[in-house]
Length: 169
Image (tube, rainbow, N blue to C red):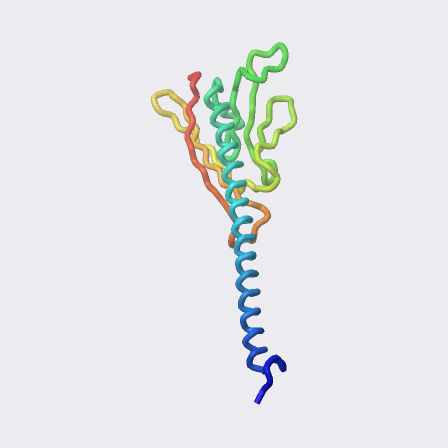
């Protein structure tokens, strides 16, 4: 017969270890899930903000452009004739949208390109499609943006598509 307070039996020790292991495993799983969810939310937010901002800038420039400069416009580059950002003594100038590596760029005539997307995302596809309806020109824009710092099969990605018309036609 055992005296009170004389120690623990092997079964009591095993039960204690099992309970502590279960609690530690549950807490660490919850922390891992929170970390994963935070990273995924950050990636989702980053790609959406970059794609939305780039699309808004392109649409704004299309709306205020005089015309589409067709000699340099392709499915992956858009060139616009505009009366904004004029060099001194000029009445018209050109701006271009295109990929600079994995980032979207805006280039004003005789200036260096400006990045429209951050370095935390990569633009994997940009497509410009000209649409002519009743002598009115529009451009359909499709952009796909991926988050760079993610595991490839869990990579946040977004594809946005919109259409903008030239108002000065």
